[in-house]
Length: 68
Image (cartoon, rainbow, N blue to C red; front, side, top):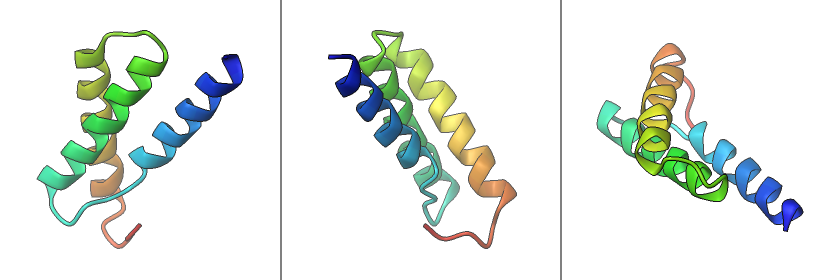
């Protein structure tokens, strides 16, 4: 079971590095990855979504030329 959680966590973290074309897309991608990570780790889904949205948006905005 622990291996499944680790695999799901790594997959969710990889999703966070995906950049959309707009800031809204970046926030939605990050929110989904954050919520999925929180679900795997039995955490707060809303907090995970908020952190994921903010993190992915900041990451993508700081690297404007990067296309995933």
